[in-house]
Image 1 (tube, helix red, strand yellow):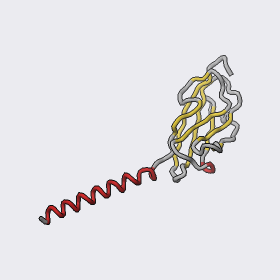
Image 2: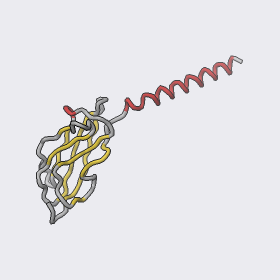
Image 3: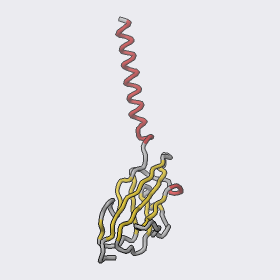
Image 4: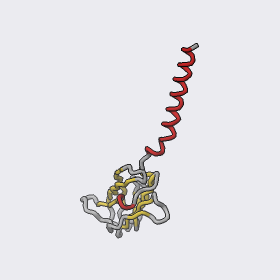
Amino acid sequence: MKHFEKAGLLQRWVITLFLFAAWQVPAWAHAFLDRAEPRVGSAVAQSPGEIKIWFTQNIEAAFSSMEVRDAQGKQVDKKDSHLDPQSKSLLLVSVPALAPGTYTVAWHVISVDTHKTQGHFEFTVRPGQK
């Protein structure tokens, strides 16, 4: 009988640990890129006025930014990267009228749970349009 009691106790501990770990998962989350405008890898007919990146969770404005570089590596944004006042998961930066070409958007953010993530993506402005 004691063997079955020990097995039952072990099973309850395993279930308890599993439930505790499952409950903790949101605290381990990071802010990953959810979507962007222009879209990642897209070709656009017109130069956007700003670049927008939405993240999977809210981010800290003071520790998050992005920049846009042309094919030669020159920073072309207006250096005004900021968090949207209505959506704490939306990061924006203004850009002047961009010439046709491929641009790289590089970002780094710290989520409200203090996890750091970073990345980059490209988009292209098609020739003949501004």
